[in-house]
Amino acid sequence: MMFSLLQEAVVAAETTEAVAATTEVVAADGFDKMQVLMQKLIDWGVNAGSNILGALIIFIVGRLLISVVNKMVAKLLKRRKVDAGVQTFTKSLVNILLTILLIIAVVGKLGVETTSFAALLASAGVAIGMALSGNLQNFAGGLLILLLRPYKVGDYVEGQGVSGTVREIQIFHTVLGTADNKIIYVPNGAMSSGTVVNYSREDTRRVDWVFGVEYGEDYDKVEAAVRAIIAADKRILTTPAPFVALNALADSSVNIVVRVWVKSADYWDVYFDMNKTVYAEFNKQGIGFPFPQLTVHQA
Image (cartoon, rainbow, N blue to C red; front, side, top):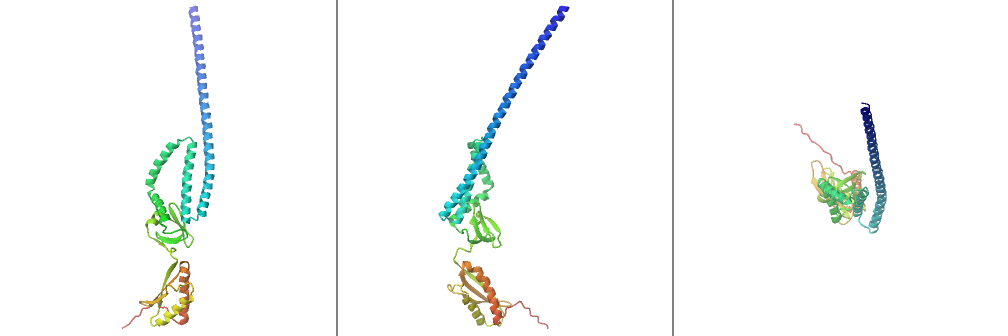
């Protein structure tokens, strides 16, 4: 009996020692795996930090280089005396292309395969192009405007229900500045395919007025007064000759049409000054201006 108990105690002790040894091996193995995992995390963090730092440096240096290239392109175009519209279009295009290349370089430094990224970018470009087909039309419209030159920077134009002086011809839009200092962005596609009135294309323009006088006024007197005003204004051109004629016998007035030619830059000054001068001169000579009248006959 005693021998049996002793034998059982020895077996139990050996089992306990075996379990303890196994536990130590498992613990050591788990610690080694944890160390390997931590080392991998540290290595990944170092590599990721290095890539991020490198990408950041590439981005900063790239932006500086893009700025320098943009300035060089601007100076080159200005030195070559390229049209202002072509200058703005070219500068915008160069800036966009260089920015795309910079993005590809930054993404490549972050560890993304540039070939896969380029394929992805091309696929995305097709999808975006289909979604933004209007902008592609505007891009093509901008090229047509630069090629056909219906207007240039500095011209006063009217189109798509708005009017103003052309400030820039960008890749997708034409920038107009209005007389009251508003900026309007008009899509190039609409400007290239729609009706555009260019008030600055020709050196001279015709100014038209219609002046109404009372019935009973001497037409020859009125015409002589108008022609004297025209002759006194040196901004009015003599060729083509000014035109003055009786235009219509309206309900309450005799309408006199006046047409003269001036330099395009003098158009509005001559127009408003003529209105002011005619009003003063007609009052001075006693030429009456009409106003609507209604005669009622009572039986």
